[in-house]
Image (cartoon, one colour):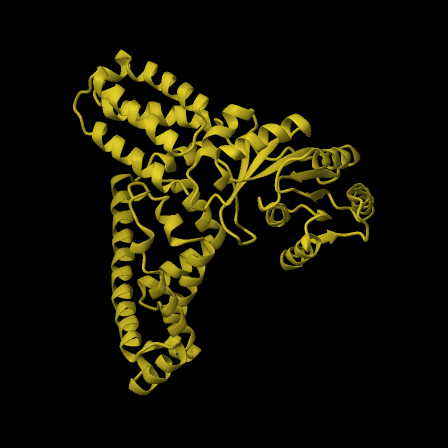
Length: 444
């Protein structure tokens, strides 16, 4: 998501950022381009006007025009305004302590990804030490109950179901079970419709009144743009929502929903869905998303992703292997697996300052990575631990087993040798630099 709007902002900032001095005309032209970029991203018109007026007012002041680096000052103003637009700061779930029951009600239209989001949220809260019970109250969509049961089994979270067509009865029974079995968090997946109707709202209101939720979260499809904002307004008026989860944030959406929701509804986006995997739900940080939209990257989120995959001991052991040239093809395969856990290569590149919006999906050879993994998995563990024993006969067998050619196996082995040498040099250089810095700062 956000690639197109990011490309526009990168071009705008490139045009104004390198100037030694800028005039009011430069500012007006840049702001006009920003307005067009926001409108093309399907941002609410009232939101665009408010954003443009406040940006223009501050950017035309003496603080910018007469500063040493006016281009950078202008970028900072746009960034700060963008953060305000998105909601200022991250808002976490308002849950009670583990000794008290907390109920989360998930709302949304059919097809918004509500059931999948329920499982992702359960997985996230389970990882934080909470005992979660999922409740299947979507009794309208065929197979919704079965889908939630399957997802619950996959993530190791209990799912409450009932043989009834009354969602209030299911919800009430689930709360009684949660109390009996000491579940501190109850997540209720409710029914949706293809569009909002009075019958749906009446049903949701009855469920809400029966469970008295701490959080009523709307799951909105990021790809629906302005429609998501109108849906949020209606759900808030009819049922009352405490926040929004934007699903399919990793899709080809333009960004209008994310940029409009907080200003129009007054409700914060609390999470974004970033993949179909159980861990594909991330807290929504306005400052980080603003940086990504403006092409500044998001190193903090990238580091946090890495920390969920690598722990300190693993990182130190890997560094030691690299320094001693003990890095094997087994380690190489392990690194490929860890990269996959962190998400798509494209999403990671977009978090690196300077690369956001600059790398095309077509430029990333994802097929080559798949073939590399197939080749590595066709080797025996003994071969992966000592690549020097992989002679012509073994290479032929590996090629047959992986559905590749001997030339591709040779290419991988050469690439591995080069990578190993290069990484060893990098680790040594890092060590030399650390010693140098320690010498420069003996008190450190």
